[in-house]
Amino acid sequence: MAEAANGVEDKTTGFVRGLGLLDSTMIVAGSMIGSGIFIVSADIARQVGSAGWLIMVWVVTGLMTIAAALSYGELAAMMPKAGGQYVYLRESYSPLWGFLYGWTLFLVIQTGTIAAVAVGFARFLGVLVPPISPTTWIIGPVNISTNYALSLSTQQLVAILLIVLLTFINTRGLRLGKLIQNVFTSAKTLSLIALILLGITLGYNAQAIAANFGDLWTPRGVTPINPDFAFVPTVSAAYGAYGLFIAFCVAQVGSLFSADAWNNITFTAGEVKNPQRNIPLSLAAGTILVITLYVLANVAYLVTLPLEQIQTTPDRDDRVATAVLQAIFGPVGATLMAVAIIISTFGCNNGLVLAGARVYYAMARDGLFFRSTARLNDKRVPAMGLLLQCVWASLLVLPRTRLRDATTGAPLVDSVTGFEQYGNLYSNLLDYVVFSVLIFYVLTIGGLFVLRRKRPDAERPYRAFGYPLIPALYIVAATVIMLVLLVYKTQTTWPGLLIVLTGFPVYFFWRARDKT
Image (cartoon, rainbow, N blue to C red):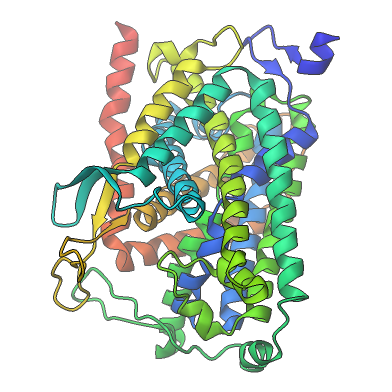
């Protein structure tokens, strides 16, 4: 009876196969829904400048995400092993490419996302508990370069404590981790549905609808996109088709980040019951559910608020969803939204923490990571991988950006206190994570073509929907977005590429170490 309740131990790996279809779908959806959907539409609206293009950004993100998930389903059904995407890249190309993914996942993709979501949690907890603030210092800012500083504020401390708490919970076994995931994913999914219904019904604003949907496609109130190369012209969505195209690609950063982490279920394949069936189904169900809610949430924003108000959301954190609830309920709306986002970010980070350590476990089993991460604790989970992930993600919470005047480049100074102003690393982490993750999504989906040729007779319980057209279209679209980001977001994308490249010498170090 205990085994039936908790899952059956896999005698070859020691993992407990305790994740059913519902649990797996909850990991997909729960890892996707964080704070992004409640925030990033303000920046997207400033970039593309119209209600139609705002919705279209989310639709394209949704189509790309679902196309990728359907492609991954074939790989997951072929290779239902702990480590997921790491295994797919290893088998498609070589151990080097699998390692490069695992290395980048550890340095920025998984840990950077965990850090960003934790800061989001602390930020909105600060709405309820004002002493939790980005400027209430425990250790004041120490400038380390012209653009960055290190500090420890009460907000950062809460973010770190969240990471530590979720890490501890997930070292106590899969059953507790999945319980947290299921409860919080259900709660935040219902919260998002409630936001949509409230916006469309109680928030119905005839003037906003006329302004937003009466002229769907003409960009207005846009923010120019300044490239980091002097020889590349500044553009905006109002500058014609080329400017709109660039703005649309750059806007994908926020929406793709908000829809990312759907692949985390593949990391836990060694703990999924009947993985050949349940992983492809959970990938499809989870991504379709979340993307549908994301598009409807943006419709609710546009039904309630004029686009200009979305673009100029007065809160410095661009809390569009908060503005919607404030329009409906008044000041109490900010409190309601803060509670919803606290629940959402808590559940999101639990899924990220749970899944990430399984990749480091798989790497260590191949001799490509610290040997201690290849062992499971007495609860049958990779505790050391969880601990290393916790330490690094916590360190990523500490950097701050130094805010500068857009015209003079001088540091911004608070007019009241006279102290320099600092921002969070959140938006930079968006660029780092999205660019790095797109590289490996393209490579992994390319691996679908490679494996069809290398292993034509391999068992494929599920075959990718629309192959080869849909996977090929994803590769083209993602590659175009990466190229645009390299040109127009160079300062925050080249570090992502550099992190990937640092994996080459590290890989050969691990290989040499494993032979000794």
